[in-house]
Length: 305
Image (cartoon, rainbow, N blue to C red; front, side, top):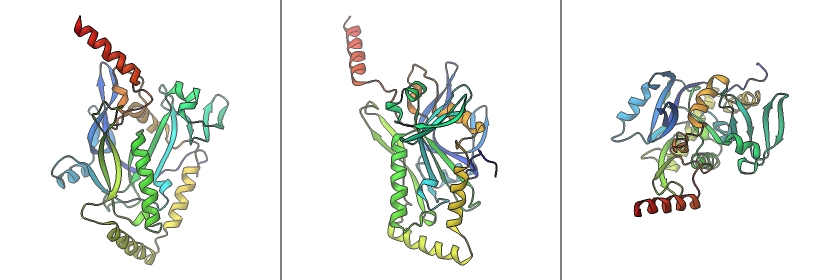
């Protein structure tokens, strides 16, 4: 195994609730209110759709807001990795990654381990637009059970909700997360920061028509069948943990450029970067209440004139 190279789950496609569009000569993230499943190939129009995108849409009467999934690993933290991340927008490479206690920061002298006070209390992070960044790996269908689709997000709501659900489902199922038949769900909410308009985030729940009790029974049956044929889930989790730990940063240089383009864009001045590509208003760049009141007062003053 090459040292310094993170060995991550094989990815055959992407799940997104946003896209990158070109406005005034700049590529900016644009939020959406439904899932899109794509390949890892881009053309002039963006990411090419995966065949599953069409088949999943045929199974619903409206927009694609639920995707049936399973997970590769029993350990919740292997399925969802979330960190405070800062990328170099010029090179696309990760510069600093931390968990709120310690961070790994790349510099001229190499990679150093430093304290991580979180973006709000870190001058280096504030200057470079450090933000939470999560990656969720799931399987869709049964064609390739050891390959996955990846959902990337900088949404506080998505990261917090998915982390809670994964740990809860793992606990109530007796650590059988990889055997549970679950569903990614798109949910909407309104906040003061979103000006009362809907923002969307990703949740995890039971598949339509199923219950938690039924899902646990099916998970135990699947676990028994896997053990009977020699499937070693614990060994798979151990191998995945070793692979993630093998590198300082998870994202490769190849993937990082696309990540920066969609989730860590340069400030545009027109609010286009607020959506993080996934329907989530970014609290670090949202105008404060004082700013909004001043803007409204200026607008009313202009109308009166």
